[in-house]
Image 1 (cartoon, rainbow, N blue to C red):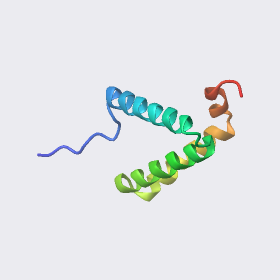
Image 2: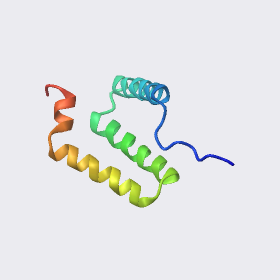
Image 3: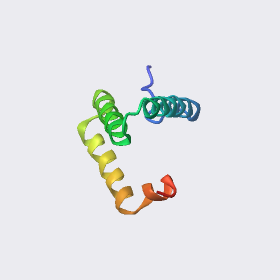
Image 4: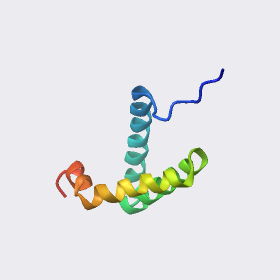
Length: 82
């Protein structure tokens, strides 16, 4: 029997992906691409990737969780001063 792939990425895989994204962000900022343009492109790319992997309702739930985090001030606290 084939087992479905896990929904959560392995910690090492997630860490590696995060490191790659961090380097991509550093590169784009170094190319004088605005933070807003970088963030918008990353968000658009992430949503496009999610749309190939999960149902629309799952994407809506992810976005609702993100909105709740913004409203609760969690993102500001994670980002530090500024």
